[in-house]
Length: 63
Image (tube, rainbow, N blue to C red; front, top):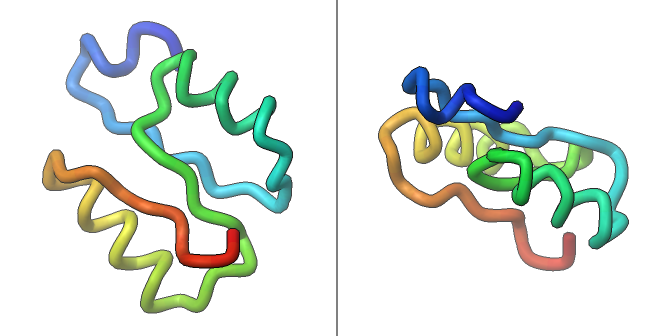
């Protein structure tokens, strides 16, 4: 992920893990946000659209 932001990419972490240290490592490496794979489709799509438009994506409540 390192360097992708400099190239104009937005990386959104979509993962089954909810381990804070892994999510923090991905954010530190350049991911713009995190969404669990178990998120309902509308929430996942919203996070993707937000990340692609430069807005901050979010993890759904309870993640």
